[in-house]
Length: 190
Image 1 (cartoon, helix red, strand yellow):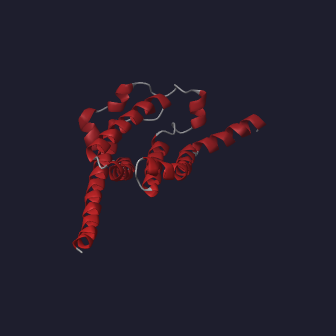
Image 2 (cartoon, rainbow, N blue to C red):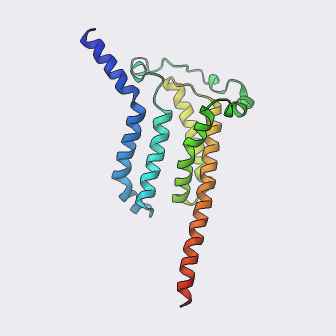
Image 3 (cartoon, rainbow, N blue to C red):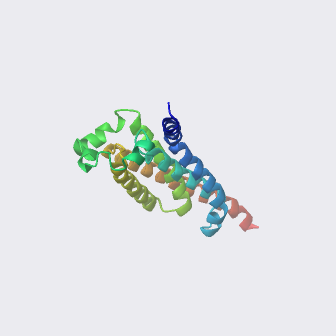
């Protein structure tokens, strides 16, 4: 094995871990920007850091190209550029295929933390669900270009996760507001 072949295999193995690297980079960015971001948007630094980490996890899981980033770098447009492949089987297949394998529930779970955290931050659950659903649509469109398998079922699963996360975030925000009000109310009487 020559040096160039060895370096190619080494680089291929390193880049295969790009999802982990993106997530770790997201964690580093989260820790660096948490305090200024929290101050800027009047949020807890922990909430800011957690939100950035949740979004980094989405990017790490969904946008690492194909089975080999090295192959993607060699042939960036070598994937299936047929957008109709993303919606094969129609709307019915997108909904019935959601629970057909382990990937559907994982796609739901992937978007729940971002939905919860963004709702706690913004207090706008409908907007959060819409923004995360548009993010999912964007991810599926990018997957066509980078050679990943795009599927309407992923869009449905991600959107469902966004809605569930936004709903859970709204419930948590209401519960926290009630808790704060009950703590403040007894002190106000004295």
